[in-house]
Length: 158
Ligand SMILES: [Zn+2]
Image (tube, rainbow, N blue to C red; front, top):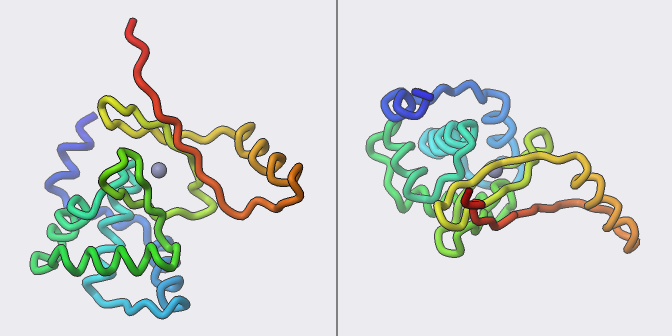
């Protein structure tokens, strides 16, 4: 796919307008201040997520800079910390060192398969697993409210 190369130069697609609105709304409910710059950071993250990427702070910073040259990494750090504290963003720890971020909503729930050698992350959804998670919780007398599943794998060499 030539998609990747095109993305490096193009500005954000911003075809996530509804999601942007939802996240801004969530921030307001949680008393997180929204500025024009923070809006650009949200857009940058959504843009990377829509490409099945799970960016770390630096990647979010560099992507934000494409639209807002004077953004600083400190601003990105601070905002991510606030979003994480209020559970508006999902903070992943796939490779046990760098935190990686993803906005999650019920509509895009998925699990991850992580290639621990290459660091590649594959998103998948399996209805049987989803049903099983609900059943396990319910068997113990609980209602499932949140869940994640990370499969750590190495590629089978042929
Ligand atoms: Zn994901």
